[in-house]
Image (cartoon, rainbow, N blue to C red; front, side, top):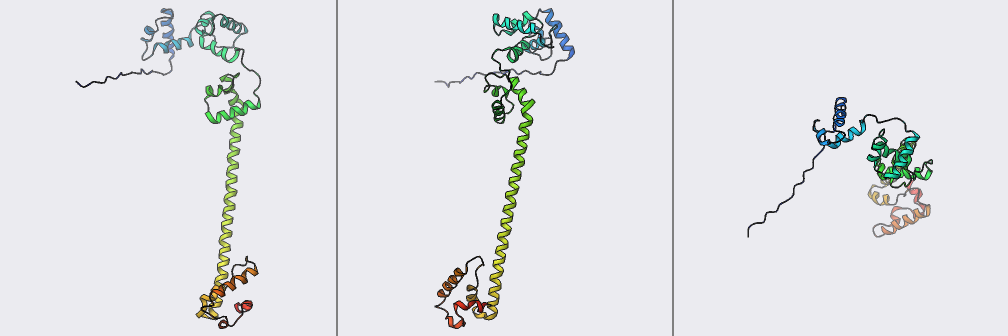
Length: 275
């Protein structure tokens, strides 16, 4: 049997190469070509432009179409949009051909953000503001995702609410939180440094006491300096009873090697000896 050759399909993704802004000359030429072709033959129209697709030409023409009103909306226009939606649904291109003074995108945005009957036009409640801030912390400026958590608010309403009112409050809260964290960290570091200094000072004091005690005992009798150093006072923080018990225990451990009489003092009188 011959070797089977595996054939793979190759998919080519055509990228939109030219996404630069349209110049005034290109806009004028586009309008002339579209009017000559009666708003049809977009492939033919796009061939007159360098690296422009038919979809780009169509979208651009819908924006700059002569007679398109970009000013404020009148009540008559809003009423007409609502009536046409009742007849044709959300077919924006069909509605725009009837209205003529507004393009499909304008009509769609007007209905979704202003005219839709399910829009809540009341002020944002504190609960909604808190939810919006928490969602912004989680998703950032992804308004289309955040909008899913608000059933009766539009994307523009949510975005405008954040930038107009909540952004400043959120940044102030975030800054105050950082300042508070820095303050707490500084307090912790100060306490830690102070405790370390105190520990070092206490150790130095204790070491000085032991050294002075051993030095005085060694000057009294150099031959038994190591034994006397064991009998020196522990830190002053230990109670007096505990001091005596510790010294008695040390003395009992050294009875096999030394005799208490040899030192010429009693355990209870060792304070006088050490002076």
